[in-house]
Amino acid sequence: MSTDFQQARLSLGVRLRELRTEAGVNGRDLAGRLGWPASKISKLENGKQTATPADLQSWAEALGRPDAAAELKGRLQGLESRYRGWKRVLAGGHRVREEAGVRHGRETAVTTGYEPAIIPDIFQIAEYARHVLTRATDLDDGPRDIEEGVCARLKRQESLYQRGKRFRCIMSEAALYVQICPPDVLAAQLDRLGGLLGLDTVEVGIVPLGAPVAVIPKHGFWIYDDRLTIVETWNAELWLDEPVDIALYRKVWGKLHDAAVHGPAAHRLIARARSALALAAT
Image (cartoon, rainbow, N blue to C red; front, side, top):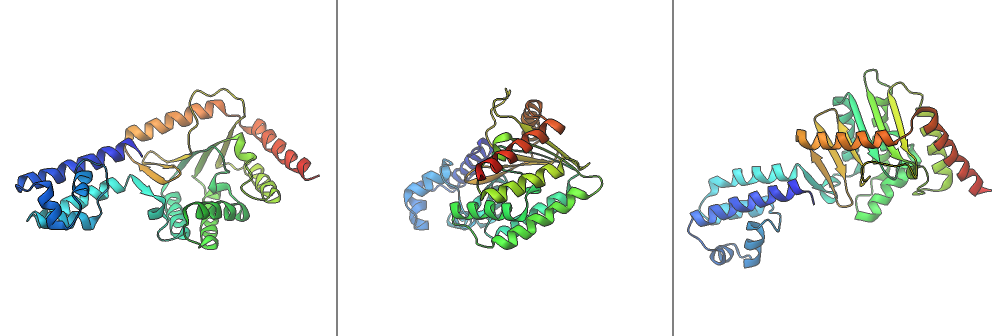
């Protein structure tokens, strides 16, 4: 869980406690009014549990402060805008999330990203994307609109050919070998990646296995101009729009960029991975 998220949850808990003490109600009495276990009052006030909008509405009304509900919900909305569990992100299905990516693409001139273990989604062919979304769905027991998600993901790639757009992507050499799909699909995906290296809008860097790096390559992330960084973890998607956070991820990306190879050297790594697949198939 991100530090920013936890701090925001703690701040909300402090405000809940303030409202309770101002009303002259102890925790046990409030729990009785709400029909909640006393432990829930403690967890919410100490930032150990995330309140729901309904929780906040009930809290305000039970203390005779229904006017405070809007403020509390506003605090919660600000908290959730940073930390989005995958259940919430995919509540509307893969298509809705991918269409949000299309909107980000329209609004962004320079997209900067890093992926440690898969080919970046903006470069994925349909069959590779289908396996990526299926793996994600299987892990989280998520929505099954795989085909709709694939179509929306491919639509995002139209921006690769738009004048004025730039895509600066770094990936680990491991991403060329991870078989989240059958070998023939991975081979086709590598062919596609190699073909993109010549686009004016695309810059691809690959960090070779064994290359010295000045930062720990923990997880994938994407920076949209200087307004937003989106970080993906196993359980959530973090949306970071504070300048200090964006600057940190730009610094991380810069260190990974320094460790990466580009141009013909990157093409040779792709060709080597492609040859290894062909050799394994014989």
